[in-house]
Length: 137
Length: 137
Image 1 (cartoon, chains in turn cyan, brown):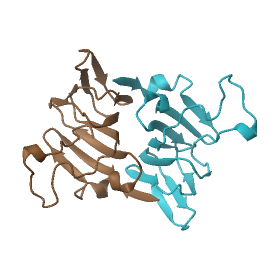
Image 2 (cartoon, one colour; image 1 turned 180 degrees about the horizontal axis):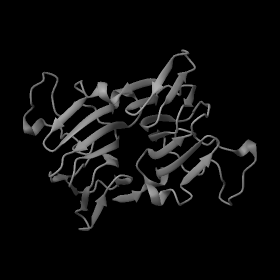
Image 3 (cartoon, one colour; image 1 turned 90 degrees about the horizontal axis):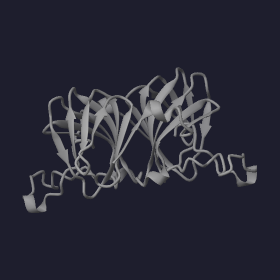
């Protein structure tokens, strides 16, 4: 049994921050669950355009409001607490948080946590960079 | 892209209630995500003894307090908002909610939603009953 606390994870390298978002990885690939589980914040005023070609992702909104635009259809959905969106077709999309949006997210396949930094801690060359699943990860 | 609202799911047969718990299935197997995703409430004063032999489950506490006892070790962990537990070894366990506990849960393999009722709506004989993953599902 694994037991972890969000506040503790936020103080470790399992808490990743980038442009417009921050994500606490509660479970990663090496936990062996077959999915990863993240608590992710998308920051107010950001415009987060995303396309995860290699992952399926589900995002459940806990706090905050904004919109998600499905770029395949142009349809815009309201985001508010209780809404879940699932990128079941690797959907290209844009999230526009009006306030900070706090979410619980699951990824399949699981994120490894090494998508940005290599083992040495250096930033790998662009050609070798595996894209960080972000931000709603 | 799938977009669903918890309040709407609660009014459908995707909201399952049983002894000591209720679960809104936001994503099930037929959504094709490779996991299922549920918003589950465990009710105050219940004692929920569980052993999922066929599923791995992660549970993130959103609201409420209680404890989880790991029956393999006897260790008791506090449950409160921000705590995640993962049954990565099909762990036998008991959850004892002190208050109602609201959780976000992911299951691998995904729950089908048909674990309790057969196609006719009847309750199948015990010998044929596929155990409902519950309550923290």
